[in-house]
Image 1 (tube, rainbow, N blue to C red):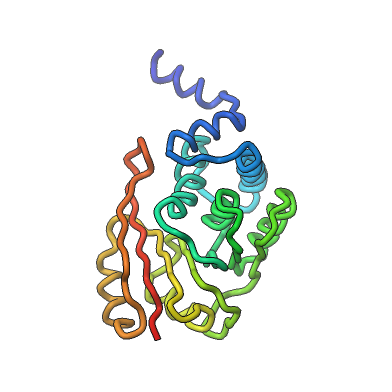
Image 2 (cartoon, rainbow, N blue to C red; image 1 turned 90 degrees about the vertical axis):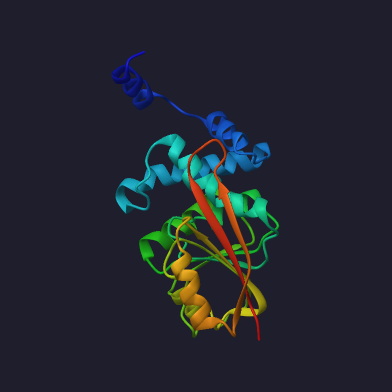
Length: 225
């Protein structure tokens, strides 16, 4: 098959839940039929609303499955996630919604200030009939005081700014999980200078989405008092 024919075949292909399940399973993630059904519903909603809301620039089916959903779930396979857990800067719901689907015992908060995004998040939660998950539809600042045992954020902003914003809600010895690219040592050094007495880096995990070249790092910080 030549390259042109291959592109045409991929563009015209129709995908279903079984294709999503195959990609998830290939990545070492095991979901029940119900969980896979919910993840497919989420994917369908995201595709239906993305053109209008521009929530992600990733459009191909395989890239969405791996770079969005699998990548969101992988931290839960690398560590024990705290609960309640806040997804800070959730956007279209990542990593919070895929994590909630894969680990239903988690109490999840999706923090997002843009109304178009929060409307979508509420629609998705209702459509999938998810329980134990809520939308924080305003910006999180130092004055946000709803206590959480953990915060997870997916490459939203500089680590220093995130730690400043969650100072009012993260409990003592709470865990902050940063999903970053492989090259952010400068942020780590700046954070150590700014928060050396308040936060301790407890783990730095390098990982790759299985069978892909996509490399990431997860950094875990405990807040100490």
